[in-house]
Image (tube, rainbow, N blue to C red):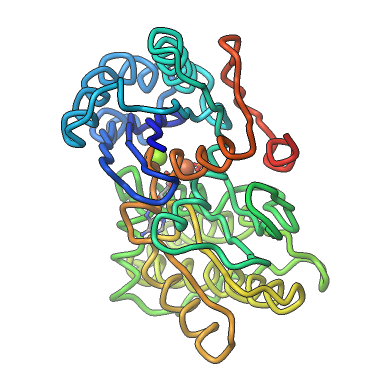
Length: 337
Ligand code: ATP
Ligand code: MG
Ligand code: FE
């Protein structure tokens, strides 16, 4: 089964062709980072326009790289939500047009299901499975006992981890998207600033990053007023140690409590070098299997949408030509379809 997958939920225009939900035939991603950099973040209207301009070229490139035609496709999968409504609409409209003109089944996919299923492109899932989703808009612990069904056991009560990374980056004068650069600066810094580790209630798997973010902003502000100079590297390192320590602690605790076989890390922040290292260490002496996708599959792409779309295809979930972008699509409800 060949699935043509489209992803336009945020600032990457992406098209991929996936065979049987696990083999990448082609995977093309066009990033808009350069256009958003001067604004310090993603501007929704700019993102939508870029998607409109790019999407047909990216589609042609994905087909030509695969050396295939639309006639060989068995279904079209597209990110239905969550994300920016105008950006999502571009992908959804293209997917509907393709499904209609080539008489193919249409499948709506949840973006976060996609991030989790990125790992299915490397190796099969082992259930029960725990996924730590850490991205620009989400920080969640998700339990899966079977394919396509998701139980959110913990989530952020305020900022997402990636969002905190991007705000800390701004505070220390690092350009958008700040995550990768904060990661790099942290590698030569020291954890000297004693930022808080925010664990919330003893038995909670929820997260909170706004207090940590404020602590960073206040520390930088106070130092400036006193005329002190703080090293960017130390700020980055101290922030990162605090964020990673809490993420790793809660992930390990949940993995043990639910006795999972596999732990999957998903989303853009899964590209973080310290998080990868700390998780690897935390799970090294357990019999749980830790899986972290390669960097290119952690950030937004359409291959992951094809992998998740294949599960929906097998479940028999078909969208009609009235499919709409759903910026607030709920993951558990998506799984219950
Ligand atoms: P969502 O998936 O929640 O809808 P999104 O698609 O915008 O949000 P992703 O593209 O999955 O998010 O991830 C982008 C985020 O990952 C950004 O906040 C970025 O700063 C962060 N990020 C990327 N690489 C790293 C890194 N090495 N260290 C820390 N953060 C990183
Ligand atoms: Mg992105
Ligand atoms: Fe994403």
